[in-house]
Length: 108
Image 1 (cartoon, rainbow, N blue to C red):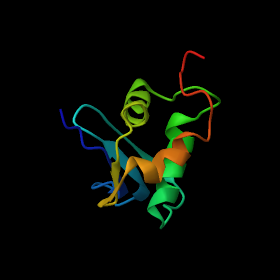
Image 2 (cartoon, rainbow, N blue to C red):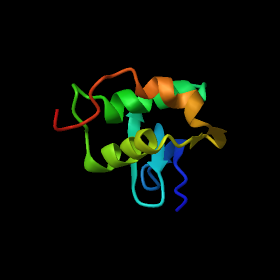
Image 3 (cartoon, one colour):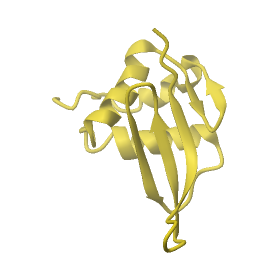
Image 4 (cartoon, rainbow, N blue to C red):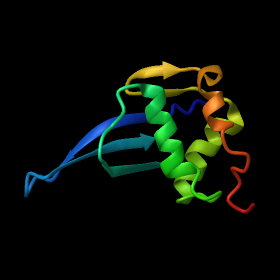
């Protein structure tokens, strides 16, 4: 079964007030989550991935939400690639970012 993973840099606009926030949307066939509170979005796609992992995946050794763990955990467990801003990155290109922390299990 195919499951394409995406991280999309996104500008969020409140249609009533016009306020604009920036961040990313992360989604696949089973889950989605986002952040709209970043001060800046890195230009480099792999820096975006690194920031996502720091904000969503590695949080004092714990996960922020079940969806985040499922999304990034699936990528790591299945050694799959990911689309970031429309560009596809193979597992070999992103694997080092997943190895920066030793414990990815929220129970440890």
